[in-house]
Image: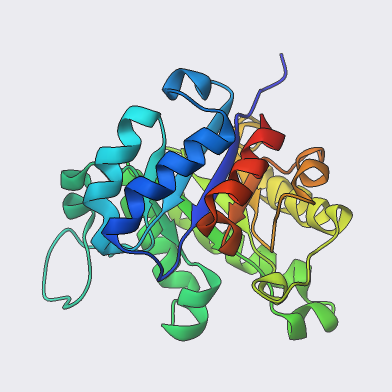
Length: 259
């Protein structure tokens, strides 16, 4: 029997919005998406918002009854310690946060995230029962040099090597760095090619059943116009959405398309 992977749309708010924005946003979003309760999503679509740390507690209060996951945008791999400015998994779980964004290209570019730290954060999440959304992707220079497969393989294998015998409940997001916030977007065929590569790497390392159940999201300027074509691809299971997810009516269009 074929594995059915529930599609996921994940909004990454980056460093935007205040607590006072939350209720107006989700009220407008739910209304525009035609969603009344969590029952409207159950088994049909996973919705997730990765919000700034200052919004996590209130976002959980608002989103939990709606059946929407709330994710942190970063996490430390240690449970506690002398890591000024960091947030641990026990701290997130205390707030009811059930997922974490890991290794986003901006974290890699601006804050020296490495394959090693991404792997450490991934395994910590898996041990603690927090869903990791792990980002991989190549820069424009790497794509132009024909290094896409090499870069993706290195990043994915680093993660998989660390997972070992831990639970395999994770999501991988392919975000071509050259298509984030630039207006450039990978074609559906280009995205599918990389998604298929990722699934094949997971199959080789962790087995076909794990690979068949793994959700892989596209994270390069997905929008209401291209989401339908992206979701028609065999190995694209949703999208990690940046700027559009800040606009309730626009993100709602993507939700309606996915549903």
